[in-house]
Amino acid sequence: MRIVLQKQGKVVLPGIRDLCQMYETRLRRFHDIESIEQKGGASARPPKPGTLTIALDENGAPWSSRELAAKIQGWADDPRVKAVRFVIGDAHGLSQDVRDTASFTWALSPLTLQGDLAWLVLWEQVYRAVTLNKGIPYHHE
Image 1 (cartoon, rainbow, N blue to C red):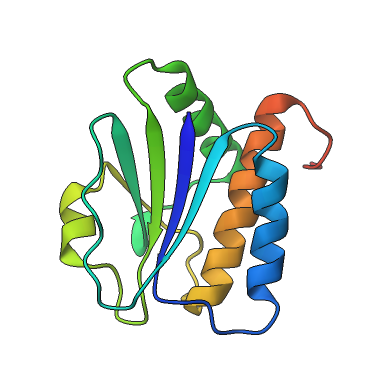
Image 2: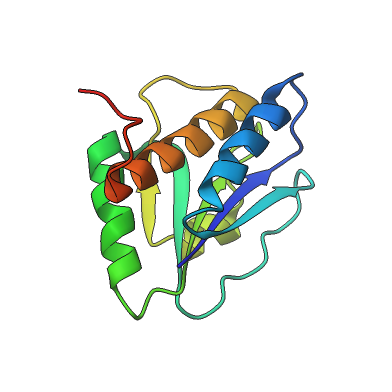
């Protein structure tokens, strides 16, 4: 299953891109991974058939790390799901086309996070979920 992480707007905080690339490199051992930093205000490309879109929004469902892991495993096991696309909006939130095509809306935290920090947290949580599913000792209770 392909996992796409998409950010509307470019990363601007120093060091964030390097940390995200570290998680991207680690994730490539397990999944086909795509990272997209989209120009702010640009419309997201429409999802391909078989792609689930997960919109990240402060009003979304609060999934725990284990819940995210279970969802990713369920999607990976579903032959209808070819890709999962996680999308973070820019400073003004998600574009309407992403909201319209979202299969789920997920809140990373009840806090409002600056976009680059949310981007890093997303990468880390996807990595954590995948390592939970693979039985790799990264997550500790």
